[in-house]
Length: 370
Image 1: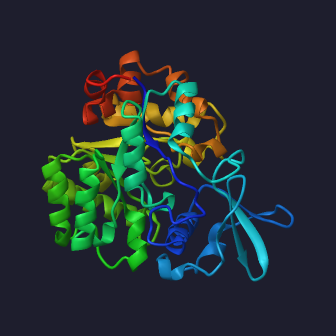
Image 2 (image 1 turned 45 degrees about the vertical axis):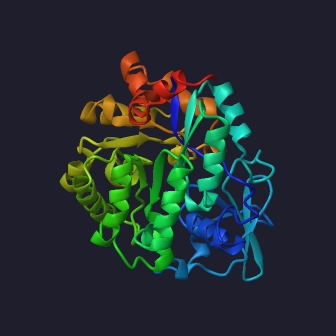
């Protein structure tokens, strides 16, 4: 069974998509766009420019986002205007005529690529995903496992805890937890603050796995990333029954500049925790730099396998976003076909077995008709 740890469905981005307003949703999107691997172009002549136009240098919070009249365009593009000049970010694949991805689109992609099951993640740029992910999981229980999302920097408040309880009662089977949301409130608290113990305790009691995406907030540098890994180790050790997946895996730009992983001791101490898994996910960040079948990524997979073992690694795609770089089939096949150094058993672990163990997918499928 091949299981994708990182896929998305979403309603049309021109709407609120579950957020309190369309404007709130667009702010989430704009924050994501300040540091993507996506390319930014000037509309009048197609000249490529920097995404730094979207925010004020030196302020990485939501307060630093510029007023650019961000709009949801066509063909995977997000449009904006600054000083009377129009630009666009090619954030989704060019073939996505409208920025919308219903469950049936992902299902068709899965059948064609030979992927059996997807974990539906829930970053705020895609929307407030609890109801939509729960709907997809209910409609296609043998195909989708939905993650829930909450307002992470306010996870100790009554309103957020009530939404957490509601999402759990919807049947969602894991949690997406993103550090990027801390920018919304000016990074006014650290995610390992003891005020959040009530939140982590609920997840611990429910035995919900946590998929944590840990960009290097607040300064977006190696120092910030390493501090966040130390904080993560603190939380994991205090809530050792929770199973954790590090979304996007280790950052190449900090720890593999020469094509081999070199992890500092503080980061290695976190990565080695028994209840933490690492996503193997290279095309979404490096597919615009490396050529398929990504021999650079293959070398890094071999290296991380040698360091931690295949039982530590989980393959993910970031569909449908990743199709701006490669097809879904290619996103599977650079591991499935081209990582020839992996044994069949190791591929089975990375491409689905580890997630099967975390969620009990095979057992659930066996108890239901297709």
